[in-house]
Amino acid sequence: MIPIARPSIGPEEADAASKVILSGMLASGKEVSAFEEEFSKFSETSSGVATSNGTTALHAAQLALNIGPGDEVIVPSFTFIATATTVSMCGASPVMADIEETTYCIDPESVMEQITSKTKAIIGVHLFGQPCNIGALTDICEDHSLIFIEDCAQAHGAKYQGRSVGSFGTCGCFSFYPTKNMTCGEGGMVVTNDLGLSDRIRRLVNHGQKEKYLHTDLGYNYRLTDVAAAIGRVQLQRLAGLTFSRQENGEFYSNNIQRKGIITPHVRHDSTHVYHQYAIRVTRDAGISRDELAEYLHKKGIGTAIHYPVPVHEQPVYKGKVSGSDCPVSQRLSKEILSLPVYPSLTPDQRETICQAVNECE
Ligand SMILES: Cc1ncc(COP(=O)(O)O)c(C=O)c1O
Image 1: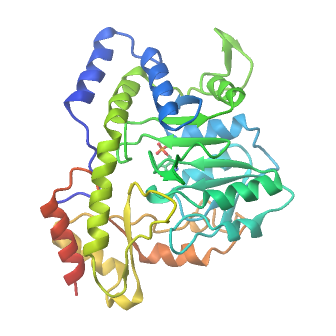
Image 2 (image 1 turned 90 degrees about the vertical axis):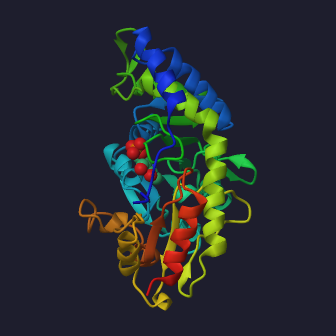
Image 3 (image 1 turned 135 degrees about the vertical axis):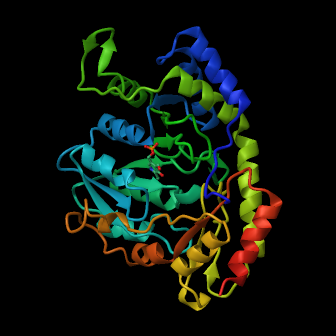
């Protein structure tokens, strides 16, 4: 079976983790500090705070930005649920914006329609590895004095107009979950150019502790371990090569999937796509449904996934309880979308087999 995702992790990461384990210093320490420095430099920002995962990165960042009860935060309705639930975790209200049909990312026009006097921030998600329309969103934020937060959980190393994602917003939040473009098991990071903000986040992820056993804020234990950071540092060194392989695989699919009614990902002219997912759309004109294609590929030993079968505003936790757009594009795409394996260690033969299967399925 060709799985939908496979982390590229091996002896170098094992060596790095093993060194930390044998040192006996397992908690957050020198490795975490080095990882924060290296990752923030890589993201073209001046500071990084490591966290236990991408969800805690988003939560701590919003808390540190004083997002709370009475505030509204505009999020795309087509994303992983944590983009929205972290807003709710702060006591604020997520407000749904629709997505662009071409890039699957948050639609600035839909965002504009959702702005009220309560709006405090916009979270732009760089979905599947492609930057959202950062230029339009930063303009909206400037015009309306809003905070722009980048959810970069799926877009390590992606560039918008030549600059790294995470460096445009007030902060950028990353995830290092095993299926992501780089991993440390479970982990996350907030990067920012605002040193005051990174200080507040650093306190919040460590029990609100200002000095040892002096707790000035209601904080959490959202820390990363040194074992995880050591793995992350090796992955960061390898990220350029891993990204190159994902892009090669993605370009191969885009050139070789040729079938009426199947739409391959559109890449914005001013951005790079790092293909966290390679998501095709199976439209009516394909003559088969998305689910029939997934079933056919499964029978051929090819794993696929649906990111995401239910838009955020239709999830039981939020249905009928959130305001915003009806999000017709999100609704339609959730029925058409299908992710194909695009991970770096996919072989040329496997790529070929997958394209053939998509093209021939009846
Ligand atoms: C867009 C997005 N935001 C946030 C998260 C949360 O990250 P984590 O799973 O590390 O908590 C994810 C992870 O899947 C994600 O894809």
